[in-house]
Image 1 (tube, rainbow, N blue to C red):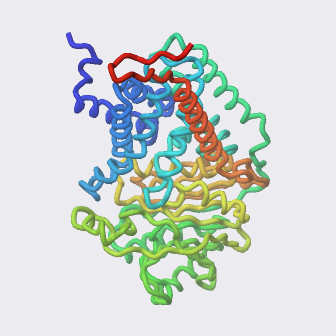
Image 2 (cartoon, rainbow, N blue to C red):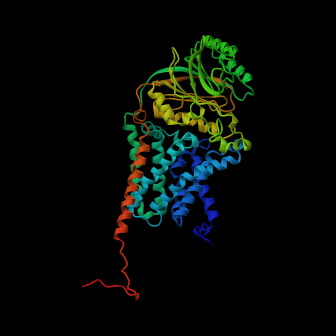
Image 3 (cartoon, helix red, strand yellow):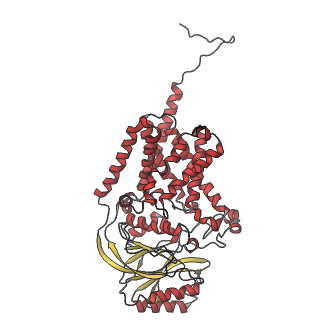
Length: 518
């Protein structure tokens, strides 16, 4: 009977196993939401990589695992981008090739206790840098950051208030490395157990730190979710009907989802008048999202627009970070062929230039984001710094109704709320719509993808700021510092080894070694 090691000598079998192992962590995210699986989800991948026969092969195992992770995380794009989904996964998977070599370098063979200790810091730092690099909008943004799988875990939300989603992400990888060491290298169990204890201590310390603002008020915010409605005119009619059901509810704000208005309000004053009438009837301002070609400047924009009793108030936020291929095609001259094999954007949307906070009169000061932007921790942090009482994300996941995408997207609001100490409202056209309090706790019911409704929420407000808002992305800077220190140490070790290597004695013309003079 062939052993597993012999079976994995086939490059294609090994690649398939690495890809499958890389896909496993996705089970910790919505919709499966097996959050408890995350602390061991990377173990099979780490074990495959550490056993690679060469550093080059470890890099390939890292690449294949990254491909599996990215493909599984974004599999719901397949009906829209088709084969291009595989291209994107393969390109992003390359980010894990150096990580694979790093894992083998530190954990391959029979490592010393010192190397295991280094692995507990360096391997998670390498993962953190990968998440930093792929958080760039042009590479798809920070969708699927490992720490985001812990959005329902109070301990992780507390950690997020200290160091953003990056801190729970880092610690989850530490636990995975420690478990992998316990499985494959039992003689190194002491540093592995020490790593687990240190992680538990760091998590416990989050309860002792004054990192969470206190609740001091409440506001009543209504979300209007029309459901699946074909055509912008019919959608507007349905949203108008649902909003009228809110009359007499003593509201502070009403929020419609992304692309809730499909016409520029300057060119459709009739719609502006209808919205103003709704504001007067309900006694609350309405935040809509206009997805249309603007009459005052060229191009199509997605814009959050605040409507008061007299019509648009002038408060407007134009979406800044666009979805690659969904709202624009990167390097269109080179990658424009994606429009012929899928549903990539036929015309690039235009970008806004700055974030905006809006004063809703007697209601809260709100910081709007549009769809994909709720994945970026820095955007919500800046809005909190600028004085937002409530964070808002207007979204539309109608294209991906039957996939994991709506649940994954809604879960991000819990993390943004915990990071900033500000409640966050996630309002969509077709679900999932949800509200989370300043600690990331759920407020009221979620509105699922099969629902058309208007729902009122009592949203708690908080004062003060979290450590994450004050100090920003410090876990990422710490990870970069750890990698730099380790790299410098490796360079010194290599130079010392080269100096200490004995020089072979010179030989004479007859082939015998010369002897030093006595």
